[in-house]
Length: 248
Image (tube, rainbow, N blue to C red; front, side, top):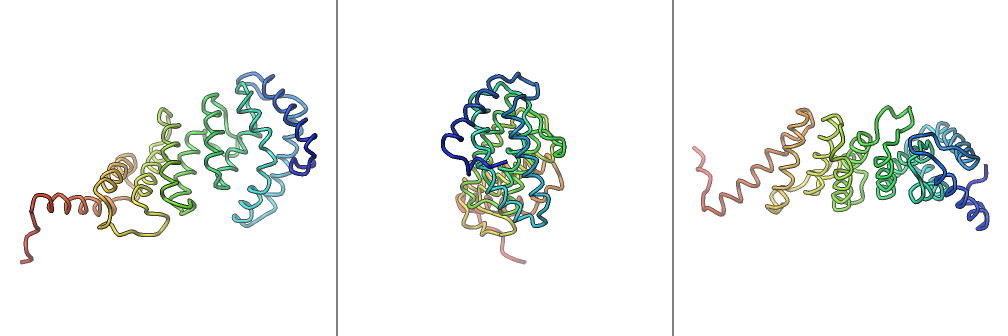
């Protein structure tokens, strides 16, 4: 199938119209039907085969970034005109956008999927909220965000989308851990100077790391909780004029 990026403007326009009609004609909770969807499924199958043939994770990500624009018209039609039909193209694109680091686009799709209770493709073996809590905080903890500041905004958006979801505690713990680390600028395997943190930074991060630990004892934040507690105690001691006892 010729990808959308190689089609003429007239072909793209026609494809957008067909996608919008398919989305609008679909029924909530039922598999989406129609020739336009069949064409997108055929493309999806072909793209999956291309990805399967690649061994390198990084090259898979690069290919996803290359092919995802081909799905934009279909995704936009679903988000603007859809009634919540089950759509393998849309839900697969959601996961691929996360893999590619396109978090804002992924969260737009995720919001639609959550509103309409859409299922992920069977191979992912998770529901949408659990997948969001596993993958996006996991991406931050693995150092795959450009900045910690950008991560805070994205992680808070994930938190809002999943706040009422019934998910494993371990998945929620990962979100709180990532958010706590993002608030103090700790990324991936890197470390930071806790002494230069503001009291507000340390306090917010400590709340989130404690919550992560409450949810899952093996989340791996105990040492940093202790470091944040020491940082805040130092501020409290300075304000009250209290100093630590001299060494014996």
